Image (cartoon, rainbow over all chains, first blue to last red; front, top):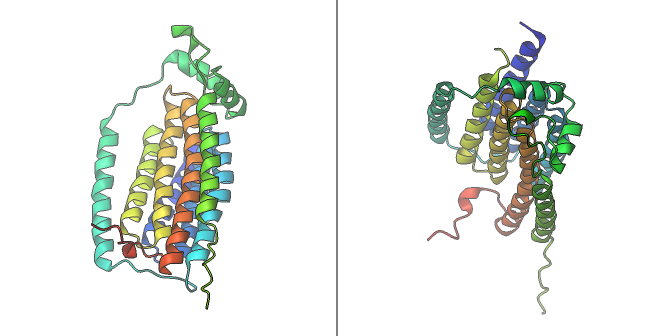
Length: 195
Length: 102
């Protein structure tokens, strides 16, 4: 078993088991803990798939930002320590059965598809960029429309529209959303009743 | 278990299904949010795996970056709504959100 397979097995098992643990934990604090494990090992899977910038962004934004936000939400909405809003056992059993059925359907359909293999040209073009694992510069270039990882021999079109406009839209969207969230979550002062 | 495309897709499928079950069965509003995060991560695993094993190239990684950013935005708004709900009902139980029931 090669080193990559071993690491993949370890982190895939950690991801799947902690995702299942999120479903079956009853206290919300434990759910947050298992979610941190799941997202952290997902970022390890990203590193294994040569997507080093995405893995780093996952660690910084998801584990460092979104999960801290979620934990703050847990703290601000708990009326006592270890708040427990129990799901009834029947619902857990029903959910587990439906989940197993759904998982079976997804697995069967995944196995049934013959995924298109990359062409020799694109392997050659992409291996210099993606397989090296140093994706920061190619990612930045792809925002500008230059694609060093794409096969340029078939269509002779190396300059693509690029991701700059979607990036701008997402940036403005994030700004608007954060302002809106701060407006929604502001502390409301109740009007003082005049006696 | 070797690291090939189908193994990555299986991990993504497990994350997705766990997220869906989490969204459907949790009564805690924050727990429902955690289910959404799991679903988005399952999609991200798929995008990155396709970026490595097919000729999608870097497109998959760029899309997964967008997904990460939009998930942050979604979590911020949903938490603001959850805080407002808690302020009004003094509980985060989503079963009590029944005012809009027809």
